[in-house]
Length: 233
Image 1 (cartoon, rainbow, N blue to C red):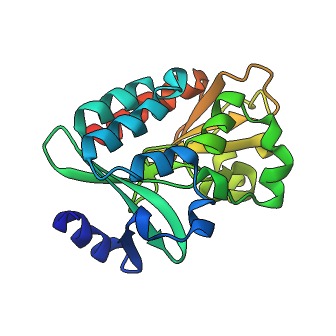
Image 2 (image 1 turned 180 degrees about the horizontal axis):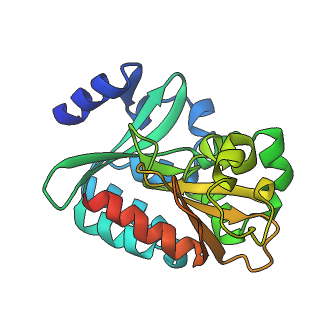
């Protein structure tokens, strides 16, 4: 157990505790993905890391750059319990050598609001397969930014502040704002969003806090690139 990690959790989430997989009851381990069980059944970090990154490597289109960064900079992996919710904590060195912590939520424990559940099938399969098999969101632990948002943190723009956003527009949007959801935020007012009515499931758009959107961006490679930028800083 890394003392620096423990101190970080005490600062940003006092109720969170690092736990041992071997101490969990069978009923609890059954609620976790199989690859989690495989990784945390071994006490050796390098073996654990290899099992974990082998799972990430199944998603090269979505996570190629992020997986490469983790291969070179991931130095610890823990299971944590927070309010009864078990998730994975990634300890990573950024380019300055500083430790940063990312949270990977349990894909078998996705929480979908009725609105999100109704449109889940309209999201790109490249996205839903991540949420259903790898992690239900993977993001900076304290900010919930610079990574795929959890299903609970996805923002429906028209509900959030659509009126304010529309005031920025010089020309009408080619889609309805109420059909759009954000899948990523960079922590500085930038969001990667998807139009649920879009036929091209690779398309997305960027919406900056006080600027017009940038349309026709490729969704998964964009999130991958922005995630690595967040990891590097």
